[in-house]
Amino acid sequence: MIISRSLVVILIWALLSSCTALSNRTYIQKYAPFQGIRRVAVFLQRWPVYLGKPGRNHLGEDFITTRTPFFAPWQPAAQMNPRAVDILDIDDCLMGELLVNLLESKGYQVSLVEMPFAPESATAGMLMAQYQAINPVDGFLFCYYSPTLFFSQAQAAPPEHTRRSYSLQEVVQTHGPGADAIIWVGQRRPDSPSGSMSHAFIYLSITFFRAADWQALMAEADSQVGGRVRPWIPRCPPAATDKNYRADAGIIRNLMVNNLKCRLNFQIPYAF
Image (tube, rainbow, N blue to C red):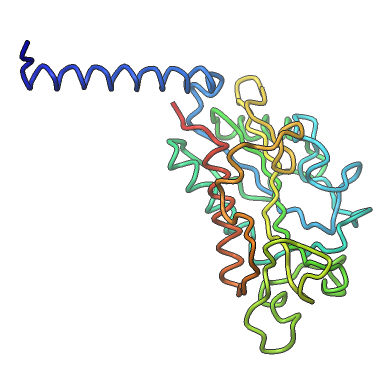
């Protein structure tokens, strides 16, 4: 039996359409609580690794809930990784632009909330109520972020890293005046090169609330969800390598930012 070319095209189109519909149905079911969320207000705060808040030593200790005093006053962190350095190059301006661009690319209409907006004692629930009374939206995204670089050995970290932040150029120049790069080790070992770095990462704690009832549609603390490692994390650069390589300030910054863009693209669903 001879099947006409037009019939073959129709059959292929029908098959592809059914596959797409099935795929969309699965996606819609997975993110059903996000239906109707289009206008989003974003609350953003930088959390240096050497600081903590009352009852919370670092951003990954607990999820952001309606009861969280989001802008609670800072205090010195009770404990911090002796190899960790807070990085100045990742700031509110960059993070705000990154979040807005990512959300808009997924179909949301975004308002980045200018601070100060409310007193430090205001909880996330209070902030949502106050903002909703002024400029109603469909959802709220609360975000703490902590851009952190880790030296391979604690003794290589700058002496004041427990009290202040450093630019990536300052980190590079820990090798000495005029240094233009630092060794990023592929696998951290006790014999890693002196003054080398082992990792650079932008830690996140984010909660996406529905404005209508303050339901948390998505919540992460320290880039984890209940301790479960995301299966797509290995797909976000930089991946582990077997070799050490030289990285200047620009390379480190780009790797940190591109890694975050990749993670957020997986984390935040499209508006529908």
